[in-house]
Length: 127
Image (tube, one colour):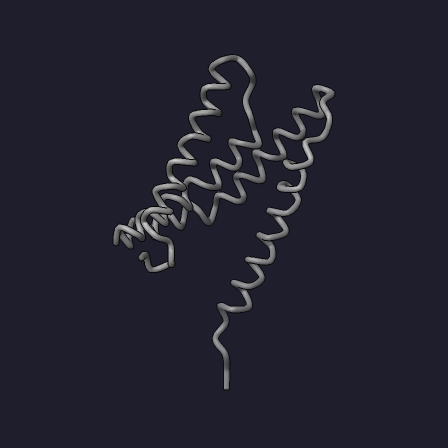
């Protein structure tokens, strides 16, 4: 078992799922079906988390810490990709992708809550 409770088998499963999603985005784009902004945002969010879990499960804590730093920035980049995809779709006259819109609204809200928890939890308590 890894320190964070993720088994090595599940970590490999997440790596495989993320790799399949990544190859699907690349194959669709290469076939001329357009770039899938929502799936790319999801993949960008999943890769650092999956790598971190696998590295922790294999006992590579320093490398897992580096992947975790990347994972801390992934929600911001994923939100940007979701908004780019939404705006480009609206400019082309397409309807709203409600899954992408929900993610684009919820990820910043979750980020603000995370930031508030870090700011409040990071202060030393005085007696």
